Length: 324
Image (cartoon, rainbow, N blue to C red):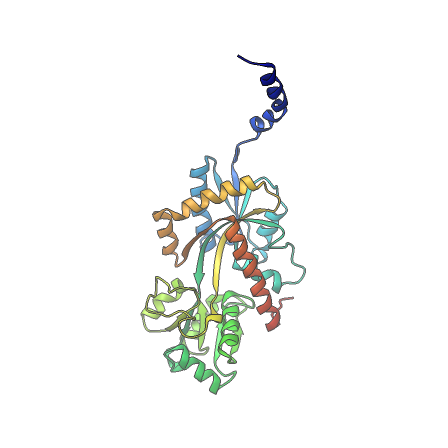
């Protein structure tokens, strides 16, 4: 039987009840999954994999959309300036959210303040390879050769500020040597012909892309830059294992939404994404791309991204890397 006290309590609670009843479910409509690079690249493949998984988990299509240009900045700015309701997600990368903002002047977004991290999908180490004609078989031998001939051993990269360039700069700093770093204007595809002819002596690159050349004996693998050995080259040591822990670096891929998005939406996206990455079939698909599944949720990924942004900013400023 209702008492007067029950009626008073019910009346006090009544104004709050519609707030919960009217709160829309997320997502209530299709979500745009914005991809900053061209179809077929690793970013595109991972983005579409996550879009498929999130769509299945959350009951609405996640529609993949490639928005290329300005080395990922066009797509990132679109999401940063877009709705703060989870209706657009971005696949951000090492370049869009850690390095490029330090390299290019008048950058159109703040990679930390303008985004809410959702999930770290995967990381990829770089592989240090040399031409056999250089006559070195280990990192120790490479350091000795570079110390004996400062500025004469040529490291090639796919462009100023690229992951290959920054890995070479980091190696110089950690090893205490001086290389001649040549940055090719039209990307990594330009590097390999010159490396295979020993016109340049070494490079850092994606292990999956370099693996066939290593297996054929055309290039020699010396180390990976990851925190652990690559499953593609289990006999190749890490930089830490060869005495250069400060040369450890990773490229990476993660999902972001615009800053100011409801934390409940970020958490729901993060939970669904982490659960997907932990599924064996999804993790295996990620590994098949040469990547290491990560599955860090919003808080951990946010800490990781802030640390990456700070670390690479210091490296880039110290090396005077700038693209006008």
